[in-house]
Image (cartoon, rainbow, N blue to C red; front, side):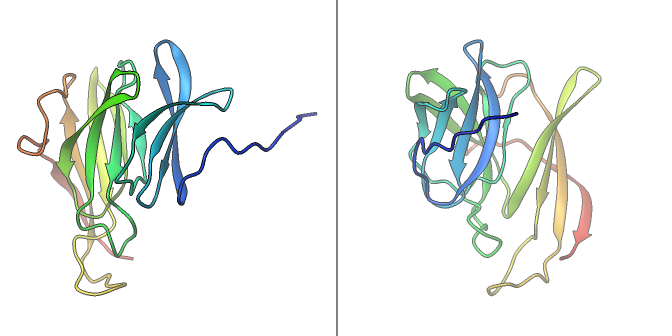
Length: 175
């Protein structure tokens, strides 16, 4: 029989996104908030090891970049379908204890989910935006889209001024 003990290890406003992360040869998990709050690196014993960032949050998805030691991608600033116009996907790279570099990979309004797919020895980013705009709360008239791009092995050249170019592979997605 499985013995489970509930334990509070930290506090986040609307803890939403969890992901496994292999870092320094050990498995960890990332825990980030849907609202404005922190992202934590937590060991498998349930102890917070590092604060990855203090904010801004709005995290729906986090995925480790294959073949890296702790580098991952995350959505950022998607607080809700009505507050996701400034959403983006960021590259997060460990630089030292409690020192994580966060750079923009691509601005993608209303991005909610993404993943990294591998095929033919290459990595591909597939990202889904719930909608492409809105004029008022709960406005679903502007269709969502699915985007894709080949993800280079070296992501160090991406930032606010040099973003990954995405291609629309599916559009017209309505609620």
